Length: 240
Image (spheres, rainbow, N blue to C red):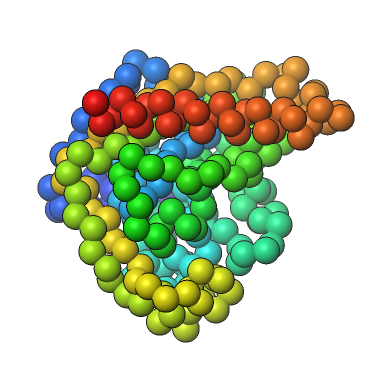
């Protein structure tokens, strides 16, 4: 897939929907560096929104079920997403692909809230607990000048409609345990949305060395917590 195709597809898609975007703290965005973009996540629009707002093709990790369900599957293919393996797997393939992309100074995106944030109706200003995989990726990848970039998506006007029963989707991906519950898959579409860029965290050699020692777990927990707090603070700014 050509490097800029995901960006072009995202531009056309958001233009067709008429989504209005407002960028805040754009001066914090590194201009020429491999980036690991980390953001809150409630809508299938989040990946194209971040690409268009940051004006860069971003290879996002996408939930396993999105590569199994018709229409969703074609959508994530056009965006060049990196499909995660089924729940319970170690995601080795994703880590290898993402590392190669970062080593070639490209941009990888991760939504650390995981699947629940997409399958449950949540308030725009709320976030779920972050999973720690993005920190493991950042510390394992031997990439000079790598930055973790926290970004908040704060929708000021949106629609939220149910689109399919979760149990129906289990026919396409029985490996997803959340599809065994009652309820409907929501579809959040932004009309007006603020995108707030946080301060990049440049991964240091000292952190990579500490990751190899006894303090690895505490380091991962700290970096995960700091990134989540940064995005929560940005999210609050987006609504006031």
